[in-house]
Image 1 (cartoon, helix red, strand yellow):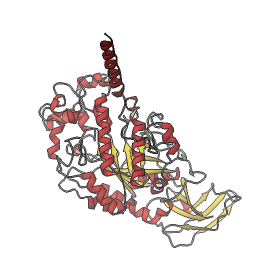
Image 2 (cartoon, helix red, strand yellow; image 1 turned 180 degrees about the horizontal axis):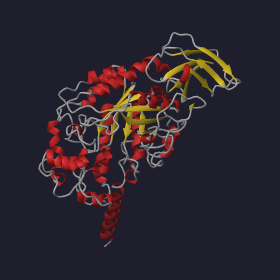
Image 3 (cartoon, one colour; image 1 turned 30 degrees about the vertical axis):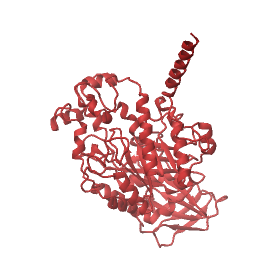
Image 4 (cartoon, one colour; image 1 turned 60 degrees about the horizontal axis):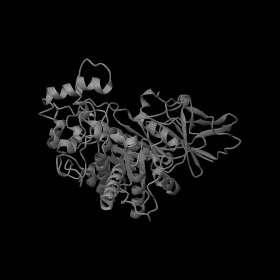
Length: 507
């Protein structure tokens, strides 16, 4: 009898232990002797934002994947192509007269979603003109200091030689290690190389109705194993799969920057967030370099302040943030990936955004959307080269600078938060932004001032002793005078560049 009781107790302990462990990520990846332990107390105590990241100011984001083949709608085509009117009503809880335009376009162009699904675009994704050398050369000419290709998007197709999924660019489609080629060439040319992961949302990305190929178990490793219940919580199996896939990316590519999209900051991944931060930061120590972890942190609680570098999607901050931060946005107004009706922003707007962000202690991560064949469209190339030309003249006011006591002056205010860029108004000739480096203060005028003269009110005669003023890119002598109401500057007759104009002020 005692033996039976003993065995019963052992079975109960094993059951509870297994049940408990199923809710926690594996901690064997982090040794007790590691600097960073998987808890926020340890991470906050030992982490400091790398200064090198804050000095770079400008990076390139790359949204390129299988979704570039249909080139329709956006990079969310693989989700929206399965959104029929019934699913829309159930998911969004609103009435709809019809299906998404992607659903209708797909059915008309490629056929029924049961017979031709997203998986069938993979063989069509050949990347026959992709050249890592050409891309990196272009990004260097653009003045970018770091590059962050998308490694895993929501669609579940890895753009690298994966050890965890067959759905990857090395074994399918292009049959090339896209991320590896970019990392090799970028590092060869002195670029800082990062990677982004959007994979956590793969669990809920696809509509799993039985009349779509997404419900076929043979493709569950692409479309996820989630069932048809839209409210089904993220399974522990999927979260462990996400973790294994993330470790594979970290261990084999040693990214200087690791950027994460939304979903990671939801309650489902609560236990994995400190695990991720500790593992990646410890790896940085092992590799002998400081690494950068970024997250949108929509909840503002998922990653405690000061444990990762904050990122804003298509949005900015209205003032200075003393901790480093970043805006990620796209050259495209209406998409991140290449689509047939891509609409580019203009260079002037993008340079103004860069200046405004840097004046507030931030970085700009600017996205390009290459075509499925691996070429970057000409209009995007032109914008990047124009930005590079501007930075070749005015880069001293951007790279390696710090924020001043005020970010700027002028009438134009900036909206705050994610996806707020569409609400912003264009800057005027009265809008000025400041950066500083050593004994130099840079006053960056967003537009050429009226009557070729400007009054900079923020430069106080009692505290700011100006000894010289020059205009970057110009050899003409600048007439200036300090007055009670600010610094008065008479601009030269000829503009040194086509966009924002930089006064270098020696204090």
